[in-house]
Length: 104
Image 1 (spheres, rainbow, N blue to C red):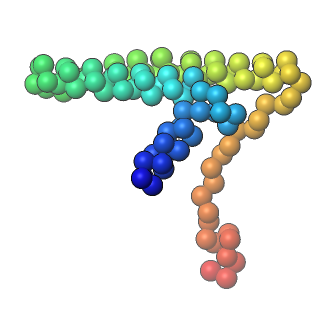
Image 2: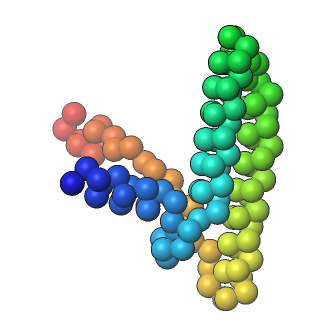
């Protein structure tokens, strides 16, 4: 029961914005990647060999990159219209034991 709740919470956080609305820039890539995995699996089963994945990587980059960028631009424009500043990007920082503990 707890695992099911954690998975549901994880998936909600993965596909929803902080406001609780569905995120197109998070959901669309997941759908495209799942479709691509199914397509490559079908090709492997049909032909008996791995296809060239370079074209798939270029396809995913050409499809997913502009949609993510367009969503970020739209967020910035919406923030400018509303008069609120766009949130700054979150940069994850790993803890550094040498900086956090000067005795080391």
